Figure 1 (tube, rainbow, N blue to C red):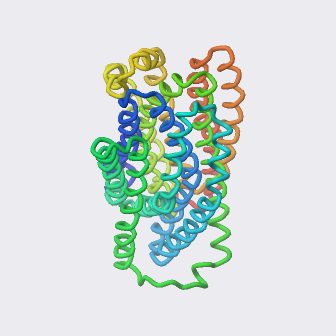
Figure 2: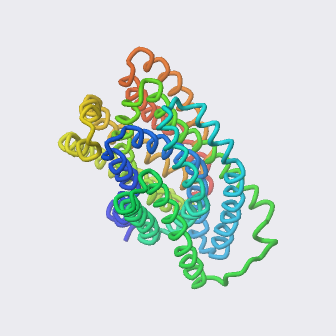
Figure 3: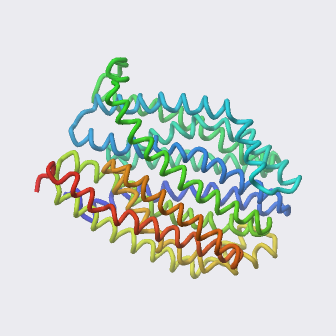
Length: 441
């Protein structure tokens, strides 16, 4: 089977698609659990705290994305020893990053409380969530590496199993802890903590058993900490780190803008943005599978394969984005009513639903570009495009929010997605230029 055909992309993407559905469903169910307790402070605190941790942990998303690019290219060269060392190097980074997060937790908490304008009750709930969720760092970051490894190996069923198991366990534990043990906001925080630690332990064992089939599992310190390879990893990961922290900051900024308008708007935006994230994770299935395929084509030095992958993945992604937009047009009212029993929040959410409908198709292009640039390890361009897009987004959002209130917040987000796609399209030709001498026509 040709490894660039639409059917092959679908074969890789469908397992990721179903697993990715589970990720935003965690946030949606957490929101619904808090949104139906009859107290706005639960919903507001959960939304802001979850967004903060999304920014904090996904700032280290380079652990997944960098792993995909490097593993897929090593896989194209059939070098399993190097794949093992890539995994071990990145696990070492997880230990360092987790230790830094734990040491800095008081500073992070106090800084976030100064940024967000919260009522006393909301602040109390926010602190409860923060003090529990912070300890999920080692587990959640380790899962980035495991999923990145198997996407890079084009074993998307395994990476999907990891994500799906984590998310379903998270949902189950959160529902039980909230509804059966009346732990409220602590319940959703403990649900994430326990599921992250359990899942990472189970699949770390599986990962090393899998790699042991192809290479001897041993730690060669000189090779593991090879200065040139460590420098390459640092350069790739640092670019992705800058790109990812800016991206996650943009969504935290989206939440911040809501707090400046009022807590009702924070709750409304939380409901709608979780549905936007649902569409994003669905569309990311194509981006994830494209990452591994692009890296493989570069490892094989096959330009024709590379170009066909890009064309077919964009076709699938944009059509799926359009389909999701149509679905949201018909079901948005029913979903909103399920996520909150507060009538004012329901009515207010409906007045901004047009942006929920537009965003899946608009954003499908920038998601797919991300997969192409990550798979080809062109992280400098990815970083520069994000710097440009976020800078413009900040200026646009400040202006539009001042004059259009929460409508300005949503228009700004749509424009941000368009800018991401256009800026990466500008850099696309540089991939061809950089690898032109290495490709086999």
